[in-house]
Image: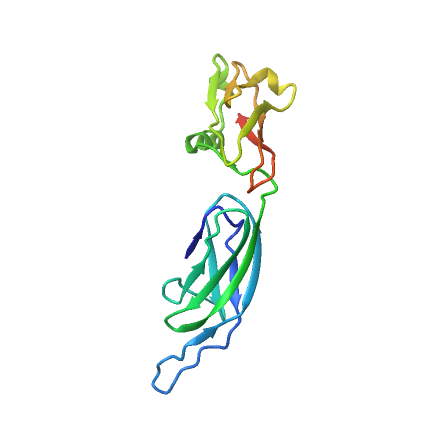
Length: 200
């Protein structure tokens, strides 16, 4: 299927309404004609997604049932694709779609950091020593700042300008939050995202 890099929030399905395939006396299937114009829209996510094409409830296979001719979606904007039937399908359909800016900044963390944050940290191990965590936030937009949320939290958690978090010695159990401020781009609006750190 078509990889839609940094495009849609979910895999969008275009259902083409065409007559059912008929079969000749020789058992050779008569080609189904696909046609029409369709509009879809979604929001930028920064993830690879797939555009699914269905005809009469059947999902078609790119390269076997159809080919796609047109500008590939890679960012927010308006695009037009032409789908041409091949194999058991003939004709073509046009898909016009719009990818809007994400309402919040899109970012991702280093995989190792994600695993550490998902697992959490034990207060017992931090009773007599501190621990540093490199967030390594990646985003299309520039990371403007990192900030610990909450007055009480600032006693136990520190964060540098480069996103290095320090869990202080003797930190109490709880959920601590780091606010990441990110600049807007052509693909998403400026704003903040929150990273949670759980001490248990």
